Amino acid sequence: WIPSVYCSEKYSIKALGLMWSPFVVLVGLVLFRMVSSTAEDFFSPALEMLSLEMGLPPRFAGVTLLALGNGAPDIAATVNAIRNDKKIGYLMSLGELTGSGMFIGTVITGVIVVV
Image (cartoon, rainbow, N blue to C red; front, side, top):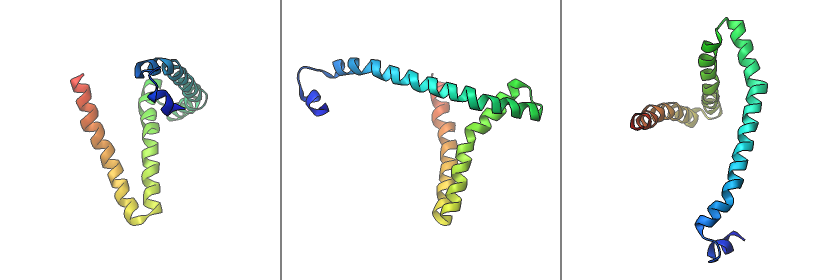
């Protein structure tokens, strides 16, 4: 069905974009709502409990514990890569750790400076 739409003279690329844009916006809103409700129900209470146990003020807890939560998947992926395959996993973990740091340090910083 899709190749026949693109080959037809009835619909242009612009018209197809206008037809799909409400659907894309709706899906984006639903996904954003799902992520925000999950964070509100599961992540925020855990963050609040950890900050109370550690005696951190809320503003410092948000900065430190959110950064820890953001870096946790990278650490888990690195540990699993080293455990699964000793030789290649070690090289992959080094590439992942240095590559992500280099990307953030160069590309993201460059975009921020340009903007």
